[in-house]
Image (cartoon, rainbow, N blue to C red):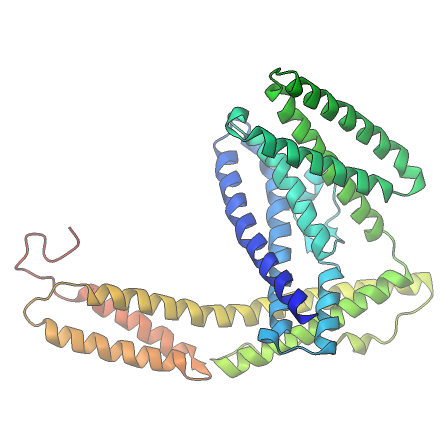
Length: 377
């Protein structure tokens, strides 16, 4: 339903912004830690996952198109949500998390993996565990253990025994911590390591499941990836059309058409080769998305810069001859705004006008009647 899609996009946007702020904080804490290098792998993987989710959210928003969606667009949204992100990570980050170079995870799985990694980093970087609310931490711990239980239930038979063993140990340790707290004992020293182990177990199970899917080069996976790329390509064409209509010069990168590859073959060797071609199409789409999104982002950044410095100019104290300066600045602002507000916005002209505005504002004569020259106190 459109209303459900809108709520999901709003919640995902909030998650993206909050997770970015949390990762920035964890990165600062890790840089100040004595063993800073020990956190590099998980931080790199966390940031790569965040970037993959943020990029997919951009495509979801482009497909949503302010609510102008029908049955086809809703199906495309579903495909973008449940299709693989193929979040490429650095070798160091992949090695640290036991993941391949490209995590074959869907959007919800990437968010859960990011949650597990963030929980692990929080537990390892916490300075004083007593500062955190005990009941909140206990609820989060029990939720993490239950997620591990669900993941173990979905493990294949040959791998379920190892997962069950880890889950049993987490259950025993969690029960022990709860019993100690109920007796009034101090369990703070046990809670932190238990949180870390639960987060690590959840992360390993998610990564393990994604690894199995990544190595399963079969016909069903190729069909799913092809459908995901078709939806992604349609969303990218919408983004490209919006970019060409709104900014000039706009990038002129072709959006690959996955249908040109033909139907998915049935021979196993041919499926492997087909998957390689699909991967190349995905990389080309990523390049096109970055180019078109950057052009639109530059227009917004120029608008923000011009607005901020125009407000600064209005707040400047007056001085002899300032009327001419103000008139010149107003004319430059008008011309720059006109370049940015028209469609398509003339980025070359706007970039030059904003630069001229900043240069003229910086060279304007100070107010000599004030002790500090009319500058900020």
